[in-house]
Length: 195
Image 1 (cartoon, rainbow, N blue to C red):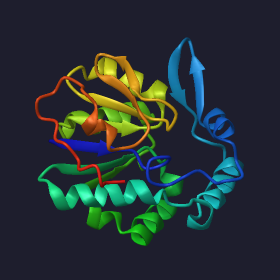
Image 2 (image 1 turned 120 degrees about the horizontal axis):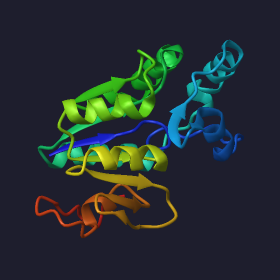
Image 3 (image 1 turned 45 degrees about the horizontal axis):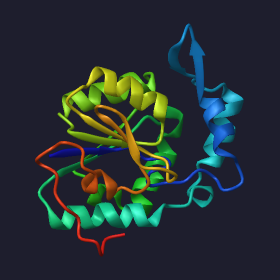
Image 4 (image 1 turned 90 degrees about the vertical axis):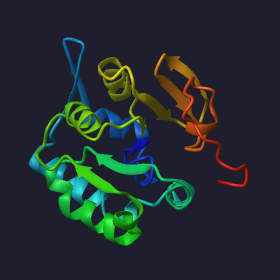
């Protein structure tokens, strides 16, 4: 099974002093009900480069440790799929090095050609034949689930766990993507001792 994970809010948190709603508002815009993400102005890029320093982006240790445990216990492929734009390339490389993501994931994909994040992730999911994908961005997941009906998508939101669509589910922790009765016979159980 091929499993994909977003980076931000899955393994790396937003800065603790900036509300999630503000970050989401700065990134997204809607035009004629279409999902669009803004490429920030030069001033915004400078602010975001500063705010993406590893000091301001604490790791989500339990999720990192959980994926490490997955790599030790099964033969699945694990992919990191981040839509970070090219102006954050140095910050992304610093995070990879600091947390040794290159030793955890079978491959990593970053949006350094500045595509729209949802189209970039759609391309990677198709190319890598990803079976399950976890993200924190619900509108993006809705877009992906419509275009990839055989893939199971998981919205990590830490508040509730329930199905949203036939192939889109809300989870509070990464382990729930395996514990949930989601209709696939290739699910495997993660021992209850896992984080």
